[in-house]
Length: 72
Image (tube, rainbow, N blue to C red; front, side):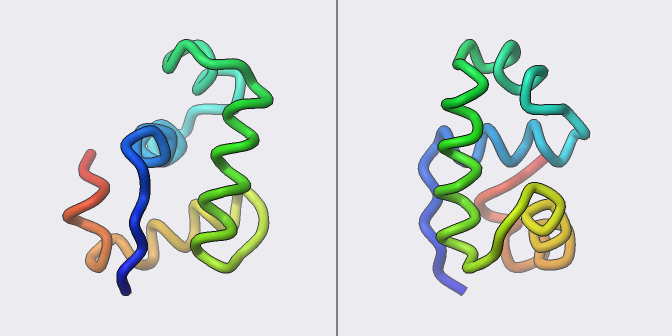
C-alpha cells in the first residue's frame, strides 16, 4: 500500500485515532470544522472508502502497514 498522506491529513488521523470529534479536532489543530470535514473527505478518497467510522476502522485494521505514516 502506497498512500501518500499530507502532514495535515496525518495530524487529523492521529486526532481521530485518539477519539476526538470533529469539533475537538478543529479546536486542537486551529482549523474550522468544515476544513476538518474536507480533509476527512480527502483521506476517504485516498483510501477508497466513505465515512469517519470506516476511516477509523481502516486505519486501525491496517495500522501495521501505515506505521511509518501514523504513530501515536
